[in-house]
Length: 440
Image 1 (tube, rainbow, N blue to C red):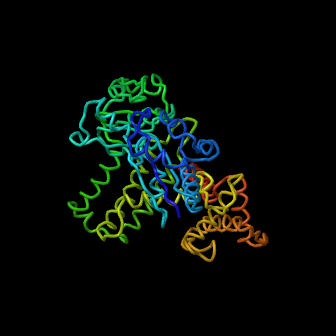
Image 2 (cartoon, rainbow, N blue to C red):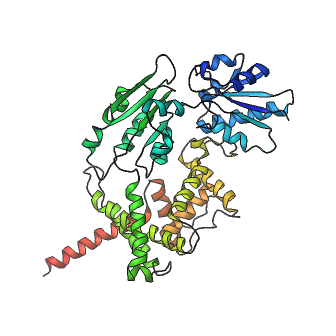
Image 3 (cartoon, rainbow, N blue to C red):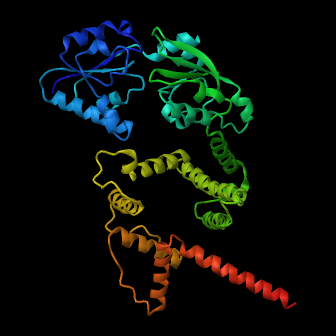
């Protein structure tokens, strides 16, 4: 297998490229460049770019994996060294390099280049080590900046919707007024090292209106008014403190909390029934009940952490990764064997198939809790039957058959049989109470 040489083109024009990168370009004839949308791209020509992949792929991750597959295939052809040029430094925000490092047996050489961050430190006048600056990705700002107070250098702010998402996340400051936060300023850095370089301040409220972003736009945030996801972190800390200091919390186990978990779940269901999207009523009670249910989840995570098994972060990471793996049609998984869904029913079919593969289950029926209420159990069974193309032969002459058929009719109408029966029973209950009052 031939060698793949990754060369960093620096943050601006070819004048900021290193001598080692220049030499590698001159000495290598098989050249590739991630994108020609870079001021120093001309120095690599003639080269093949991967710009067309950005238009064809459904996600950046799909683009990066396709690039790596092509580079590895070229290297395995054994014709000669392969040069792969990337903007900035290969060691800063370059996902393709991460993927290349993970390829077994690949002979990889990385030639570092000047990063946009090196110029940014000079323009904002800070020592990143002394100031404790953290570099985050603008495309995933709400996650990457969670819990951070700053300073932050935000890279890849390359579109208006990215700036808008950053602004909305930053203005979500529960312990400060939104108005006060909106009037504070953030530093915008554009095209550093080029003749049309711009470094200026803009108030948060105008970030996605006053800035025309491009692929060489970044932000410097000296201080966040409140850390993103701060309330969740405070809540988790409180649950841990209660476990350490409250006699009742100290006595609890996973088993002793079962009844509380069930009770809080039913109270959430009751609150959901009271929500009216048209009048916007019921949401206050739903918010409270969801908080009570969340406490049960956090409490079980605290107990598991004590046992050395998992933490709340592991729970969040696990459900994140599971949902992502079960939605290949959304996240562009190139190795998925499942057909792209045309509608919601096909999504469910794929979901069940992927779930069986991941869980190693022999049947889609495996994993349905046998203790579910009968109507809910029937609802699950009907969904499972539909996912594998089974059409049950239902004898509606029996009570059980009529109940099963009623659940199926409710599904067809987009209704939940359990909730419908409960609501109907509550209506009868109201009539009983009215009759009782009238008889007094």
